[in-house]
Length: 267
Image 1 (cartoon, one colour):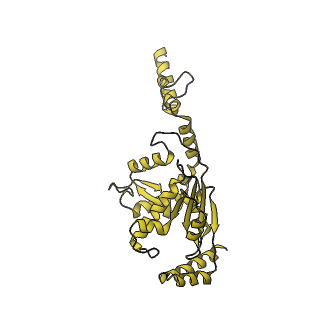
Image 2 (cartoon, helix red, strand yellow):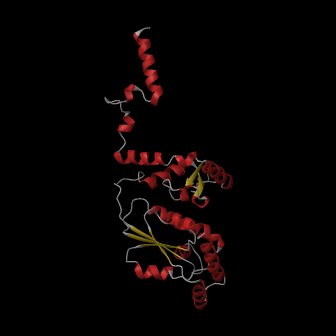
């Protein structure tokens, strides 16, 4: 065998191992493309590798097929057919987010890649800030005093994520009785703000107001490390408050539904 043939075979063997030619490595054998990535990028890639099990799970395959069959267009509004199923709020390996149908949307690959870049902090310039923001989820039945609690405890400059406030910002004509057609948009706007808390920001404290009767609801809405304040005000007292405030008639049903769901979730 000639030296040329042996060299070519050796190079082919090396290429087959990881797809990188010897000419594309440094003196230590590290691929140049890998060496050029920043330590932060490599750390992010290592973390994502720890979450890959989600996409090998049978539950994910079923959910992916379901989402793509139910949503014919990219959720980003570009009009393209979707090819990827995206987590509205990054799951970071948390099962309650990874396999929650309400946290999934269909997207085309370019829109999904752009969203992922924004979420991981590599879409723009600047160093990521390691935040010590305190996030508190305040939850309970309607008329339990969630908004009042936050008003009493929040400081100027705190971020407040309030379903009713978002609804009115999106055009709801009432402070509490929101048109059904707006509710999916209200939910997505709220979830987008909550997801934004897991990326680089300068907020020192944030409050999330939600009903969240189930433990799974609270786990989905509260970022990792968030505090949870559960205002489990007595059902009769909530009804009295609703009547006194002349809330819409379906508020009474919502209070009853909250308590029914909450009690069932305790067993």
